[in-house]
Image 1 (cartoon, rainbow, N blue to C red):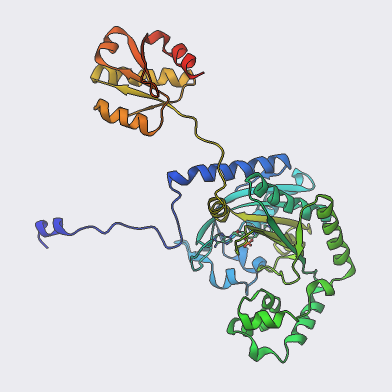
Image 2: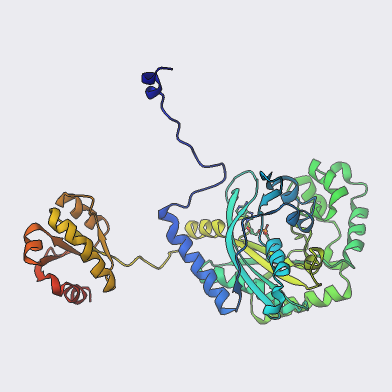
Length: 430
Ligand code: HAM
């Protein structure tokens, strides 16, 4: 191809990956608002912040989440590094937190240890409403030497209060207990017994699940399977006395707090690490969960740590934003308007560089367009951003060491000496 022809070829712009979205400036106020709420709630309930890498060893998630879980089977962003390590972009936060807890001996930080986190997670799923491949979670985890049911309620409360703080009304907390290593095998046996002669009526996925992870049958949304599971034995009727006592206490504490909840005997969750309490949180009118979690009493031991029960929950931040936008919940924190500095001519432009620094030191927020010379263009921008005041700095003013302050609403103008500019602005802003 000649050089001339090469020039003619139009370059295709590179787009983002499917299901991985930019968070553009217009959406940043939503993210700021949610992150502020999570941080404040975490601070109030004494959770300590922890951050773990987005990339981890593949093995970290395989066993804890379960080899037959949807996430491990189909949704891992996994690959080999140049050094030959099998790694994965984390699909969730809990396993990473537990890894870090064991690796750094975090039990010395106190009992119970309450941790919170926020950041991107990755799952190779079919993008749809409320489901993306890169999404963000904020989560709370409580690890302790005992499995006091009060901790179950404290994690639910932290999620609940975050949504409350964001003015999301009619939150629906669904809860169940799926038992422990003692009672779950008995339940599984009962479940298999129930499905014994019904296998041919199950969907393809459930025909497979019945041999790998029968409890996941309760999670199926295919109509034939939904019908069948209505009559299936329920986890709650098969709990051992320890699990029953635990669950009773959890419900008692929820009632004491007047946190409305709904028992959902079909709630089982998708990861193997869960024991006893599991929960999911919904907003009215949406069929995706805003948050979810549960207890994981054997996870730390399974991952090589000392036996310490844990419980936690995580919320999906994109989903929260979607709900807030659909329900037209106001952010309630309008950005403080800035004053606008208009320059005319080279001398004023140069002097403006220093003037902006002086205003910054005085705590005055200022916007400028030093790259634009046209007075009209600058005035238009000042209007667009609804600046209450403009400072007009022209050749004459620069020469006389003065500046014009213009009230953008009334159009009234006043010339003040540069030395007195801070006081003059403060006077007009009040
Ligand atoms: P999870 O239910 O897989 O649980 O995810 C928690 C929340 O993350 C969901 O309720 C949802 O809001 C959001 N989420 C999950 N997948 C997506 C997606 N593809 N797109 C958008 N949002 C999504 C966990 O991850 C557990 N680690 C929660 C936990 C913490 N359990 C104990 N501690």
